[in-house]
Length: 252
Image (cartoon, rainbow, N blue to C red; front, side, top):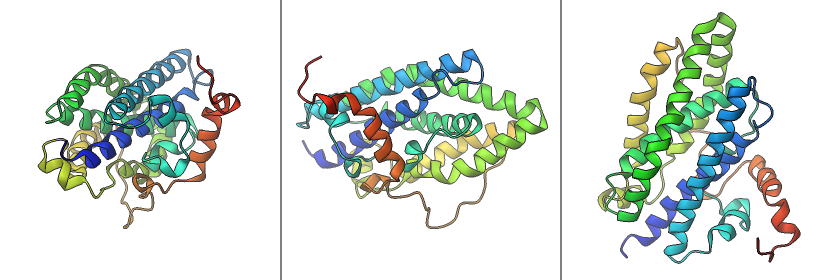
């Protein structure tokens, strides 16, 4: 298959983003500010980990290791997730804004992949898109309600936007495969996806009386796509692989 290396790189980025974001979302189980949010984050976490399994399965079909090995037996340096997803959950305001930024970014990418020239990726994108729209709907509803609720809620969310936005741009960190993937019709460039994402989220934030901050150049959160991560990712990997490390050859 032509563009095999580029395709694998894209699949690793997609899978690793969803896996790590899913684990971060799962950390709100039992900690949500209200029961409905506890359940919502648990459900979205389960969806995201499921998406990662689907992308790891495609990688396995292309000659990579099996999904469990890929997910649980790699060192942090081999992950291609954006630094944004590996950050700790912090407070609810940060996690809600990260949820808003991430899921709209994921949906923007998945919508584009519904037209991918790689049929298996196109079919998977069509399936995932039917669920992701509800993630986006939840994020928009909660952000709007809290931001418009009172001054304190708006202030906390604006602070979270200021913190999270530069990190969120790492979701669109360019790679050496961008042009190749676009020319092959597999996936649009990161720059074009970022532009579309901003066109979607900016009016929603304005509606919620929130604004995007300026981002310094070069972006300090770039690097994850090339294996440069924060210490938070290594800590998370150690936590999520604790069981498999006790008995690596166990069959469940």
